[in-house]
Length: 143
Image (tube, rainbow, N blue to C red; front, side, top):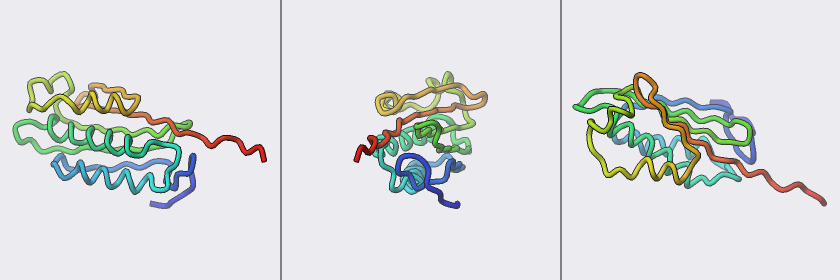
């Protein structure tokens, strides 16, 4: 991946896509990749980005592929008009079918909603979670 200076202090490519197996270790792998992609990032709440991305991947791993099905989770990060966009997409059961899939505590999506501007959609097949994080710009230099 070639690096370029983009956005408010980010040392990143303009976009990054990663395909992960839908296994528990992929949540921490996603966190590490997002942290590396956003290194030197200023103006974004990096802890919120990391937590929300990790939770979204963990939700896909836990709920999208019930009954031991094998699958993948895609992670896409990009900078768009002063916003860091993190998208997590799986190809398993849709969000409507997840109530019948493996259970959880029900804390992941409410947490993601508190940390980001989020859209959750049935992607036929699967689910797409798109999280947006504003990038603060530096105040103008009046010196």
